[in-house]
Image (cartoon, rainbow, N blue to C red; front, top):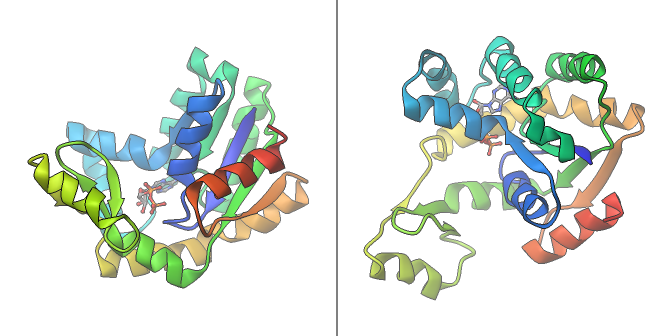
Length: 214
Ligand code: ADP
C-alpha cells in the first residue's frame, strides 16, 4: 500500500507508521527523520534545514522535494510506503502527485490522525527520549515506573530540540495555515480516511488498520 499520514505535530503519525512498518512490508518515509539525520551528519543540506527546523518553520520545498525524489527511487519502496510528515503544504502535494505519476505509482489512501489541540500540547511539551535506551516517553502520560527506569538504567530524559513551548506554538500555527488545506485536497481526490487519534495507541492502531482494510 502507498499511504500518506496527515496530522498535526504530536498526532502520532511517526509512532503509528512504525507499527504498520513492523507488521506489513512497507517502508516509512519521514521527512522529519531524514532532515534530523542530515542535521546530525552536518551535511550542507542539514545546515540549510536546521534554522527553519529550530524555529518550527517549514524547510524549503526544494530541499524536501529533493530528498523525497531520491527516496522514492530506491527499490525498497516497491513493497509499499508510508509518507509521514510529507506533503506539508499544497505545493508539496502537487509535486508529489506529478512525481508519483512519473514513477507510475498511485496513492491508496491519506490517513488523517485527528487529535484535539490540548492533547497535542501535552504530547509535545511532555515528550522525552531516554538517552540510554532510546525509548520514547511522556512526562504526562507514561507510567512513573517507566520514567524512573530510564534513570535507573543510567540514562537521562532528553527533549527534542524543537519540543520547547515557543517552537511548538509555531509548529501548530504552521500546521493550521499550510498543512490543514491538504485535508480538503485529499478529500477531493477521494483518498481521505479520518481516524480519531486520541486515546490508547493500540486502539488508534486498530482504527487505522480498520480504515485501510488491513
Ligand atoms: P512534527 O510533525 O512532530 O513537528 P517532524 O519530525 O515531522 O515533526 O518535522 C520536524 C521539522 O522538520 C518541521 O517542523 C519542519 O521544520 C521540518 N519538516 C519536516 N517535514 C517537512 C516537510 N515536508 N516540508 C518542510 N519542512 C519539513
